[in-house]
Image (cartoon, rainbow, N blue to C red; front, side, top):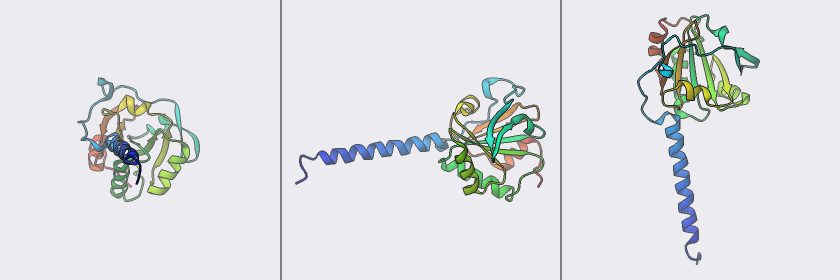
Length: 184
């Protein structure tokens, strides 16, 4: 009636491909257990991480990272379709009561994204802090232990990474890492 079963093989192949893609998304999106925090590059906490003008942010043409070094900087590297990245964002929003702390800078960077993705993320998630985009994944490959999202970086006032960890990081832990109780 349906030929020699060719349609069944096609359906099985399509299902296998779909399952494989779903598994890849989960693993590539922080589905695995987080590694312990490390200082990137196996170097000291004094390694200078960021300098210069880097990315579009909230309608501005570009952002100078050095302008954010006046207080500790927490960077959330996220994937636009990463479920655990969205969960982490929601946890931080709840912790800060949808306000921006005055004594620490928060910044979400969407990896391998375009400007519209950043605006969409900020609007859909109702993120009160800055959201920017990175056109590639170089930053995550260089500074994140498991090379996947979510990845959280903490940068000190001198622009040095002092903390890097994959997986969701509790805001209370980030307060400990930044060394300041977040004020609003």
